[in-house]
Length: 322
Image (cartoon, rainbow, N blue to C red; front, side, top):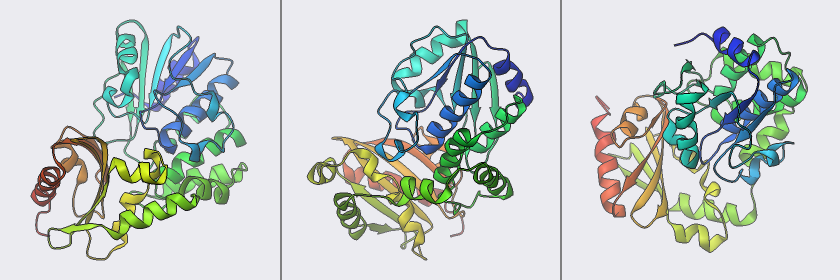
């Protein structure tokens, strides 16, 4: 693995760059991408941020989010992936990035323990948010973070730390957030827009899903199921499911929380959270997914009850003495 200084030198000496963010983007990948875009721009390096899908509306309050492109428009010298554990997480842009591995300088800056070290140059440090790594990278490039940059970074920190509540939050997380706030980033606004703001229809949808949580393994596993018809009934997009997986961890008997989102008939996107006794990265890896010890995801295929049974068994296998 490369050092952050080596990555900084590569980027600082580059002639142009495309910054890749992962599919179904969250605040961390978008915040990292936009902050690095700002840093490279200040260095006079032409660059752009790409993502295969639409930017969730909850993140559009920050300037520049609407400039993210669905596909590279420049033949850049460097391809940089931020907050991307594996090229499959790039979705429709995977083939673009993989083609770049053969003929371009490729860089991977990430914080997932499941990272596959897929680029020519890799820096992976397990932290509460990848925004902390990108902050270190920007400073190693000799760029002084400004307010705009810090707003992007604080979005990433707030999002992936669960508003500073996740078990992997440490002093580095707070020091990075403090720097961002000192530079003028509005923590209250960012926290509200990214985590708490919702429409009436989303609140009603949330209440219905939570009211039908399923408890298994002696109430140690809680599962929220979101069918495609639920979203359609309330006129919502899949982004409305964000945050639901975190609710069940507030229940004292629950050790692992899962949210099953129906992508299409027979296919479910699974988000997993743990209080710490169960490594949900290992659970997700059983099904070809991954992420963090406390927060991971995967895709499961089959009828709902079958999916729940397989997931429950995988969690049980990783419970140890619980």
